[in-house]
Length: 638
Image 1 (cartoon, rainbow, N blue to C red):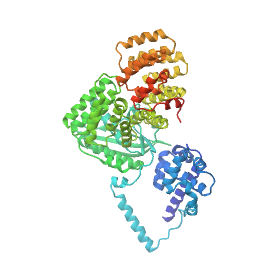
Image 2: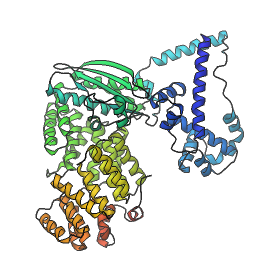
Image 3: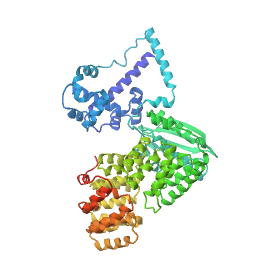
Image 4: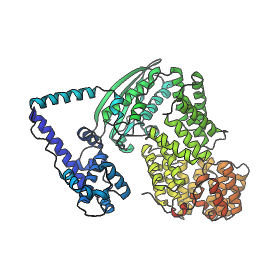
């Protein structure tokens, strides 16, 4: 038995040595991360993550970073280069970030390493005793072993919250998709309920920072099992998949779920059935999330553990109305959102003290506010509902998101927007909609590195939602990276050929590249398929040299110019060279709180206006910095 233990320990030591050598061989490669280490040792990322958690209690990223820092400390002790030079040699692209990590790890800054040379020589140069060393089990040591074993058993018996309360959450490692749940209730009328449970599980799993959970909209591409799970996983970029079914009658609900590791081959990791009354639906969701977190061996912060463990009973009729209302809101058409809002009002009438329908109402009104809808006070209603939800439960990410959207697109309160986006993402790091809009916030202040990070993460989290990819493409266009914009648009059109926002960006990028015919064709197609995009045409025709066509459509638009039309007219007259008319319509768009106004300094079509004092005065009214845009017009994605 001892020999078997020693063999197991020897294998573990060999495995760790192999990992360490792989990192050392790629020390200068800053892009050497989880995927590259997984490939180097020929095991899946999922297996690598679990193995390192068992052996070292570390995430893969922590393991790689620790090796980089240990090697850096050796180099600094040997005085082989400056701090900046060594930072680059161990794979840090930012010396300042390297210095922070080094100080956090060792307790002193890297430029003081020589002071600790003697101590570090002993610590860094020491060789750990072999894991296969014979065990000296004296009677006293036996007692200590039994005491230790007892302590381990006691620790294992601790509750979920206590287990996780003092463990810091590692960077997201395991990418997970929850496929649409199969409706086995026997009734198509229960589709909303099954969809709601699916959405709720994704939302609860997304609260764990150790997971990257694919958004619901992208998983809806796979309603049936007519594709191999490996093909689905490759398309979504995930390591593991959860699939299952919902069945039940009356107020009883049963859910069957299974967790499948996909690479290098399909392997069923876990399966379980849950049975609860609808009143205890939140308890059921909590149990599912806890079980999956344990199976994947992912750490939770103390706050994440508290939120996951939070359970309460809900009125069954209210909860069904909540799921039904959110089902309609998630269709994203104006008529469906309005229907969802009416149903959520019914839920609020049942119990005004339940925070869920208030949070749903906030999202519904913020969706309407960000659309061409004519509903008055949509944003103010969203704000009111969000504040009510937060007063009942501060930990609802959707309520904080609604406040952020109101602050960003309607009230133009930048500090509030920043704070609420941060809180929404803190509560649900996988909330793609928060990342995609937070990216736009960062553009306002020229923080392009953060913009790219959040915008690209939104696309990773929801790769088959054309709008988020369209936003990323438009940010490429805004910053002069037209080829990247067209490449992203091409990816979108592979799965949604007539996506409206993609057509808008495609035409704009073509025009910016001087490909006039292609640009006109794309914008004409957008206007033909989606009449709300007709405001594009005057600017497009003006750029194409078709001044009469541009003026004719502009005159038609003036008769009933809403916010989008006012914006389009400002662009058109800017392209036509009539700056007075351009500023007139830009002011009308400002008065109508057209949501794109804060980004006018980044819009290439407003370049002719930017040297005019009236433009800088508008930027001052918005309380936004002005001037950095010109320096960043050729900025591209890192």
